[in-house]
Image 1 (cartoon, rainbow, N blue to C red):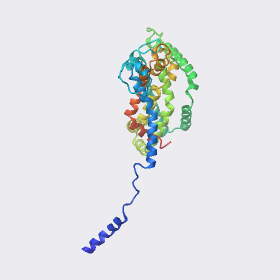
Image 2: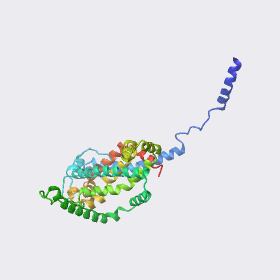
Image 3: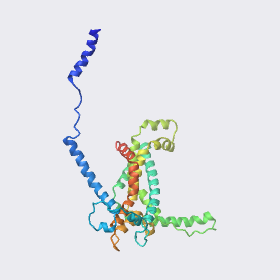
Image 4: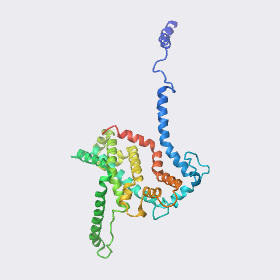
Length: 336
């Protein structure tokens, strides 16, 4: 018995005598860690400092702002600049604050995001799993569109929206008497240029290339056996998409949603170009009118509050779905 126990414990003693194996634990305060975390701290401070200045300035009154210390916290917190930015600030001929522009931006954002994500998901699904003759050429042309500067397309899109509205108006006036049997009024017009509908179509078109690329790459990472098994079971194009592919696509849908929400909500160029009436201006155009106003006293606290209100929507959406955003980006970047 003793010999057997000695034989069993002999290898263990040799292991203990040799000491612990594996890499030596790193010191948390090593030189490399100090450099890395110090650099990250400086970068975070660089980006957080302007946000801090905006927040504290928006909570101060004008007399305190005129004292000149922009980094000091407010001596007396006031929310009057926020209320004025939302309800009373002049954005041109209207002095009802950003509230009108907020609802205009919502009416632009919701259909634009829904249409662009829905169409791009179907495009990516078809280009990754239902490849047809010329699909790669089509995809290449679509990707080229993602690198064309927006400024190059401004005037052609103006012409396209104008002529498209005229074509739809003429079509309606020809079809309406047939539908109403000549008993209804057919004087209605369809206006795309200068309307929210036209701006929605512009955002959907310009969001298509990058979103299609994201969905195509994400769907290419899904095991092909799932698609083949569904085809063997007799499932068609839409059955596979809605029952198999779409339930697995939450991360990439969140990525596309965040990209579209950020781009559409923060857009200024398309809003000021394709909207003709100040009553339909999105929030960013109204913010520009508030900040660049040359009449009266320059109210920096109201300007800062208006800027924070304008950027609040994409910021909230990003923080609410940040983990899914990272998952979707990582999954969509492994295949092409």
